[in-house]
Image 1 (cartoon, rainbow, N blue to C red):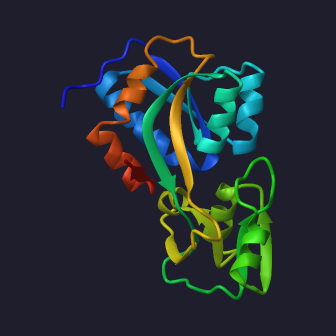
Image 2 (image 1 turned 90 degrees about the vertical axis):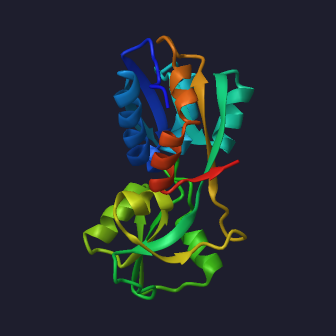
Length: 218
């Protein structure tokens, strides 16, 4: 495969918090081929549109399709990549841990999260001894890794980033996987952000995204 080419040194990429680890690895792979650095700024999904509306600098945006559709309607997006990725939600814990009746960490319903954790537990019929609320999935993962919780509701990208184990997949009728796309914003002022979007379709990028927990949709 020919090396990717870019005409800029730095690109600013904003993404949902849960995507940050895998997109940092993807940015490093892009830099190795293009010498163009990608700086990743994780943001709660409910805070992305307010940032764009306030003209906070973003060249590239990777977010869930529901947020992206709103941004397109508001005229905030210049170009959208064809690629889509699915991020399943699971109950996860440390390797060797499969306890679901003790302490489970979940995200509260806030702009920083896209999962209403207590509502999901209720729909699943789970009644753990204790439910710990968290601001976002990063905090849920921290509570599991630190031993404060035995399990938690996480996206697969969180599971891979923290070397956790899936205890129970989430039935899609209870909580469908989140679907993401990448785009160039109207605020982009650096040359060739499209080079990064083109890179997303390469086999090298697909491997990084898949290893990070995302399912590539065709």
